[in-house]
Image: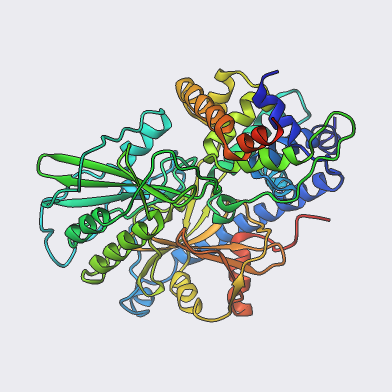
Length: 358
Length: 159
């Protein structure tokens, strides 16, 4: 038995009493099947809704192109370009999004950073923000589009970070690592930022303070760029919902899905019927409470609202029958109490709100 | 063996792994119960395959669960209460804190390799990663645990 095995065994408390777990599993399993059946019925009903009715709901919700259910692999929002032309041509030709390659490198233990001397130079063409390469199954993503406006501000922000000693000791629990790729005419430079430990930014060798602040700056630059552009009218695939670093705007929601994930089965993405996505988005300004209480119920099933940039708002069922809403990875889930009528529609799609514990 | 009997016999074992993954008794129970609910429809009497399927479901649920709360777990007053062979109850908290500094995939590899004693090939298949990645994550995870401030300060204090 090696030292790690001894440590792990030494960390265990008394075992719990598993009585009730089997019954609870049967109840939750039945609730999942009931919810899925109701969703199928709702979708069948939605097919016969006249197109004229959909058009009359207003211009702010576009019915996306049919998304095939049963996709065999997890689509990566961070590597999918938003559909729909921006209002202005990019300043430079769009490069290839490096985030999928970075996640692949990390999974193979081969994520490379090339340290450089001095400041980030002027003349950067664009930048990419990649979500956490360390989380399982790509659960946190950055914006799908590159930053092409305000890249000089990104460079200035990095060059203003204070250096840290190499031997600094850091203890905070793991939260998030992000990667920034800055493209120049003659190549790219990678930076890594962390929200845990000492919250550093690094070029792979040198350490600088301000991982959280630098991320705030980056997100602000992307929000500024998006504010100056028309939001795409079609959302990229969002099931499973890649929790994004940039929050979605309820006013820019263009698609809604019931997203159900199963271990060895395909991830199922069913479009919300009719105008339900728009009604959920509109209702989110009301009935929002404090931090959502643990535990959630669905364990993988969620209603996902997506804007054209691929940012998502997720709605899950709480054990007490209420709902938890999360908009972007950096915000805590909050409790949400929609109207009784809307709640009934959501319950039908997500399954019973009964607690799984006896 | 009925499903109820299976859960009685094997549930605690899965919970221990879930506890090391989540660092919290209640989250561990929720994780196990979520996996049980997902896997239950496939139960047709236990012949070894259902438990393997259930274990895989549990780890996949843990890795793909996107709730931020699970990233911010911070074990506090969790003290092992097993009698006999624990001279240092505070070690539990320090080990859990050290584990909490690891990304989820590294944590999963460590629990599978060094707590569940699964071979590299099985860990790779279960997590859907290459054997090279398993070895890489195991190496990095072990190094990180051994170098963790939570554990090295404890060593310095006792010497």
